[in-house]
Length: 113
Length: 116
Image (cartoon, rainbow over the protein chains, first blue to last red):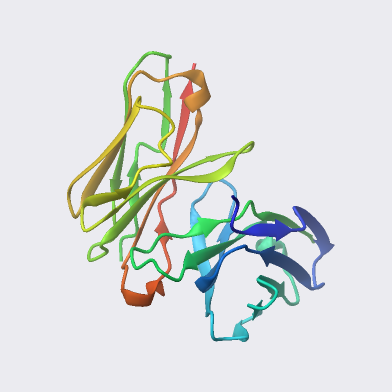
């Protein structure tokens, strides 16, 4: 079964607006990570939030985690055209120590200049 | 610092041919992952290694697919014989897996494979 499910599948906004993407998962996790993928490139790690954390910030990124609802959100504030990319959440199972992650299907974000 | 290096970046070949994709993980990383990405199926984990040992190959689609990691700095994914439905972007990623699993994965830029 799919562990991480992103919502929405696609999002189009104007430069300067905020973008919010959501991720839901099914099983218990050790941590949840967000990645960005630019067209034609590999995934790039953005931010990691541990299961005992509720919110984390990194520059214009804000991630929240609600383990009771098994969901996370990624907020990008003051978006720029360069933020145009696909964004994936990934979960690490609590019992694994081999680094395995389960990736969701991703949200495609388009930021119009 | 060099990231994960994959080769070739692009491969176009005819069905039935053998295809070998190569990956050099980040030095010091002890876990290596092979993924396949398509529009229809998204990002799929094919196989991953920890300390050069295959841990889980349940994502490998068929016996036509095989992967090896002869040492800590090199891995290959082989498809023999290749079929058009194998066309996809194949990614390699590595990480430093530790207790509690709180480490990100680092991806290469992938190999875009087209089987005609």
